[in-house]
Image (tube, rainbow, N blue to C red; front, side):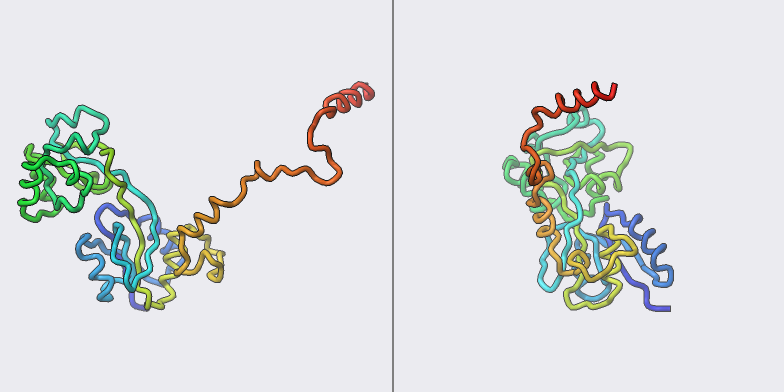
Length: 254
């Protein structure tokens, strides 16, 4: 048996659908999917502990290939008794006087609007894991701003989460080392990108160095079908007269 192909993923990311497709297509190629903390994801990748990592962007891309995959809505986690629990969503400016139970640098939009006292207290907070921070929030002290999937992962009966406007969405991407030539990397990329089993690897979409943003740009600039309605040679540009001709033929058949 070959060595398992190791893919790590940060909290909130659920690769289950890709793992199922891998198991169906490559039953003789074992894949090891392992959760990893956000702070350790890049180190594990660069050290060779993992071949690929599903992580949150942006990251230092030196020596790496990175494919952006999708975005997540940011939410604020508060205690069940907090005033925010009574609304459908909240703007980040409305959290200016709340104490952030995480590194303020992780939510620069909050840092830009935070009151002096709240910012000072947040900066002085000891480092906590997300689970620990949510436990503190449950007691009524402070708030946490995280991607929705992370809030769901750490959900408790004594906290709620609400979407936050004014905060950039969280982006998830797939990263691997630029010098890693393991062919299984390309297999996993194909599955993540939704290529069928019969798709060839030789096309532009199959290249691990292909820029998905550039491909998206090409799709967006392609002319729409509605804009390519040039009449064929020998056909009139308009349709006036067609109903009368058609009507007269129908009357003739009667």
